[in-house]
Image (cartoon, rainbow, N blue to C red; front, top):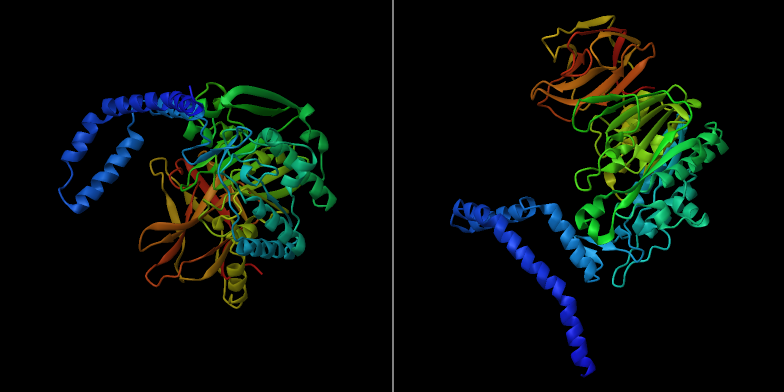
Length: 525
């Protein structure tokens, strides 16, 4: 038998799994879609636009209504694996078996300039700043892609680090640190997900505290960031990450997941603002251990075991924290595990995710909470929303503020909320000018009843009866608190400031007394 005939036979044998899979897929489609497709076609108008609508509807049916969709995903992954194909559902399998994407170099000039401006803004206010551009798999040193695939994302890390070094901005090159210390991709990343492992985040926390200590910004309690002072539970084959959910666990397997519980004393109070809502979540722990009870590859995101989720705002207090400092951490979901470990070092940690925060700019928020240190940790270096700090706009508004404008003053404003009225509020100020910067301060707040830790104020557009932005003040606080905001550019809107006892929709059985509220035009001096 000739070599060419043998090769044809081998090719035919290799094709058998694909043929069987296609037969199975056709059977499943017939089983699943006969009634759905028929009803979709019958309800479609006979026209060009109707045909376009039909194709969109059928696509939605195929994507969302497939019989036992997860079984299909796993079978598809197994078939692709048997055939030795290195890409599936826009995910690439690297030479070491990790799933990732093909990253590319992008123009980071604007984001780099925004970081430099932010560093100057913070420095002028005596606030320390550290930037941690977390590498992803596509930018990790020595990442080996399968033949036909490549990545130039490493150029983004180099560009960011070089720009920060030239401008004198404190930055930590974790990619270089991993290489210098012999950490490979298995040590740093989940195989089926884009995030780094808790082990890597703990290393980043140590690097961060070493730098802050060197700069005299914070004391580093080294023992609390060493493995031997944590109980580490490894859940084997427990986590199927976002990449793995697209390919199934039969394509490249599942990941082990490590849960770190401190062996030393902590005293946590956690509160988080759900993105797109005015709903605050309260807890006295930073771990959601519900993900460790039952394995569910496709419906759970085990990464949220740490710090729960991507809230637009978070505040964590730890009475056992080593430093009596206020720290603001910002970035994307890479910051979550880093934040978890850093809470052992500080008594008060705020977190902001600019992808979801809509109540103002970072510059305004910095003026409100007055942190001692700001840390930025993110993986997506090209995302504009993460680098839209509002520094330039803030400084321009501060320069044009009318310092001679008389303050509006209310002393001891009191609101009583009834149990049968969950949206009770009073109007503090109305007829505010459009496109105008304002600073609102209060001296103290006394709170009784209810179950909130916050007093909410809202900038309300009376023409649409919608909140433009909100500020959540600490309840029962003797500390002076500030809210800086800008009314939108609109001649049609009429704006007012509302005060709630508690947060909107959760004011029943509550009352709040606010001392010396003051509203001024412009930003703080």
